Image 1: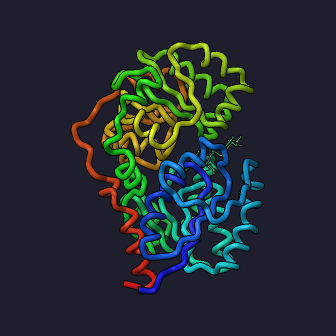
Image 2 (image 1 turned 30 degrees about the vertical axis):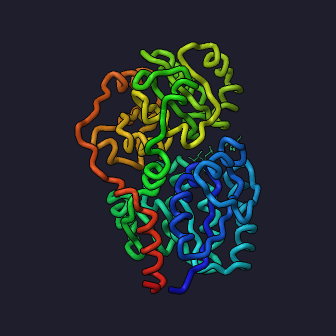
Image 3 (image 1 turned 45 degrees about the horizontal axis):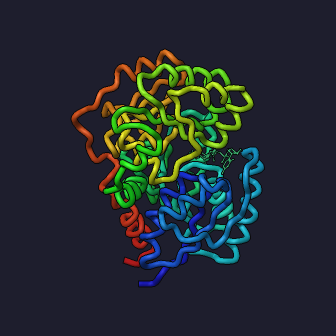
Length: 361
Ligand code: UD1
């Protein structure tokens, strides 16, 4: 079989988690050039994921760093274009919905390099989210749309996208199965001074919450009123805002909230899997909670992962204190948790879809 040259572009934390599985599967039979945009650059936001998940060292790091949306996206594009023109890969693989995803897709599409979008077809139907804009545009530019769920397939169909669409399952489940099974949670629980099933885990980084002092304040009020300790690994964006809104002291002086730097992948899934519930505005963690059978309370009004809500494992509550607390009170653990995210072999399916697309099998 002819081997393909693939350029994979990653840049933000959730993309490292997804690429870990896809990269491993691709490299079995094909050549991968891995590009890190540098959108996430702190050790805890980037390097630790490469180390823990055994992701190969990026061949290129564009070191784009932080910035406004246009600046960040715009700065990446000429660098990616130059690289694609030099390597002329058979395919560019992009992940999810970040500015890195959009920059790579725009740069590739304009020079007719085919794009495969991992996690295609997700929609929140909320255009105030920068991620929603990124997703919609990238889906319309991609030749291969690799969908994690049935709902994502229907979303694409509703937008008239039917060619190149494949239901492959969720690669985050692959990564969770590969790395999280059999981890001894004891030492990690001890490090944070909590007991299995007797603490919550919270994360907040979505712009709509973390950039808004009133919303951030009311989320904190809810966390301070819970009946058990809360482990809160704070995203750097949120930390900067907590500081500037004068909210950080309130947290650090509380004995109920354990404020921590961002956790590594293994620590995240370990602490998540033993928690009473997850309180989050993350996209990926809603699903990870479902993988581990942990109920989730989502600090947003909508989600791209409606299956988790429909199956009773997730509640959408926004950011008001009273609604968050009411949802915590109402938490249930349904008896059923079907495999709506596939069987943990999405990455292999992705490679098969790619090989079929190029007529190799
Ligand atoms: C980005 C993605 C979001 C994803 C999230 C995962 C976009 C539009 N959003 O949001 O979909 O869920 O990553 O974390 O691409 N910062 C650091 N160090 C870092 C990274 C970020 O200090 O290593 C700080 C900077 O102040 C930066 C801010 O966080 O300005 C925001 O980072 P950015 O990557 O722009 O967006 P995220 O909020 O992380």
